[in-house]
Every structure is written in structure tokens, then in C-alpha cells.
Length: 240
Ligand code: NAP
Image (cartoon, rainbow, N blue to C red):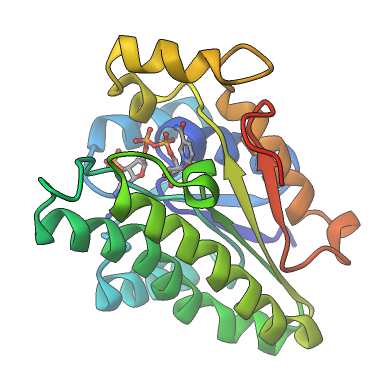
């Protein structure tokens, strides 16, 4: 039977490319999203992939959402924690709400989804958790103390959970994308974006499919010895 993969924030952007890639690899794919029904309906119309609407930053809603997925689709074998938001501003201007919302969704979402799916993966002796971090969690970014802290936290979360999952056949890895041509980056003002692109050695933004290819590898049987790692896919913008 095909393995079940849940992609949070799977209705648009990088998440949608991940959904389509995992579907091509034979997974039964389920997307999650927050509120944009039109994008979720479009995904369903184009690919047949169903979407479940719940806020990954809400602990109870995430547990209930995953329970519903397991009842309707099957036990969850793969979680891709991709849902994320930005609420940019310098510390000087950033409200506690902007700090908290980004931590709650971007980092809290990883915890909530792992709490829901990890026990079943452990019991069945196979699982893949892929957390989407960011180059800005590795290098920091002006005007993003909330986002950089949450994404950096994701990288720590990944390494810690990888140690817990290893002996149960559950691998946990992160991908740190650079700047990718999605709606999130479309929100960056053009002059700022030009400066960012000038600092990317490959000389362009990345494509969502290029992140999806990394996820597809990490979900494969071939990646069984890869755990606790962070794959940087950033056009050479940050190397370490
Ligand atoms: P995007 O185009 O803005 O799409 C975000 C997705 O996340 C949407 O499906 C959205 O659902 C969903 N989402 C947002 N808040 C949610 C919540 N509380 N609960 C459930 N779903 C939620 O983003 P993207 O550019 O594809 O980015 C995807 C991931 O990659 C994010 O974690 C982002 O931080 C990371 N990343 C992106 C870049 C980049 O350059 N784009 C770079 C580094 C890292 P709705 O459509 O319903 O709102």
C-alpha cells in the first residue's frame, strides 16, 4: 500500500511543488492549509490531492486534523512541515503579536505535527519528518528576528528529534531554502529583492521544484542513513 505523506502549507508555493513531487514518487499525498480555499480547490482540481484546513500553530487543531487524516486516508508515514509565515519588521517596530505568531506557526507547527504523527511512525518502525527551515535561520536577516529565530529553532528541533527517531526507523531532516520565487518572496519590495539576487552566486531565485527534489530524496528509501541533517538549497547564497 502506498505510504501517506502530509504536507503542511501544501496548497501553494513550495508546499504545492512538494505535494506534486511526492505524488509522482508514489505517495498518497494529503495537503494542509490555513484559509485560502481557492488554492486548495485548485490543487484538488489539478492533481486530485485533498486538503485539510487547520492551523498548524494550534496544538489541538493539529492533533484533530491528523486524526481525521488517519481515519480518512491512512496512517501518516511522512510529515513535511512546510507551512510558514513572515511578519517582518525591525525589533524596534515588531509587536509581541508578530513575534508570537511567527514562533507559534513556524516553530510550534513542527512540534504539533510531530506530536500527532511521530508516535505512529515509531510504532510502525518507519517514518520521515522533513522540516522546512530557511537560509535566514542559518545566517540571520535584518528585520526578521522572529522568522530567523523560529527557523533556527527548526534546525535545532530537527537534530534533537532525529536522535529520538533513529532507532525506530524514523529519520528527521531539514531543508534550508534560499530565496524561492513564491508568493512569500513576491511580497519583498523589488529594490530589496534586486539586492538579494545580487548576493546569490547562481544569479537567480530558486524554483519551488528545486526544494521539492530535496524533499523527495529525503523521503526515499535511499535516504535511510540520512538523519539530523540540514540540506541547504540556496544557489550558494550561504555556505557553511
Ligand atoms: P507561501 O507561498 O506563502 O505558502 C504558504 C503556505 O503555508 C500556504 O499553503 C498557506 O496556506 C500555509 N500556511 C500558512 N500559515 C498556516 C497555518 N497557520 N496553518 C496551516 N497552513 C498555513 O510560502 P512558501 O514561499 O511556499 O514557503 C513555504 C515554506 O518555505 C515556509 O515555511 C517558508 O518559511 C519556507 N521558505 C520559503 C522561502 C522562499 O523564498 N519562498 C525561503 C526559505 C524558506 P493558505 O494558502 O491557506 O494561507
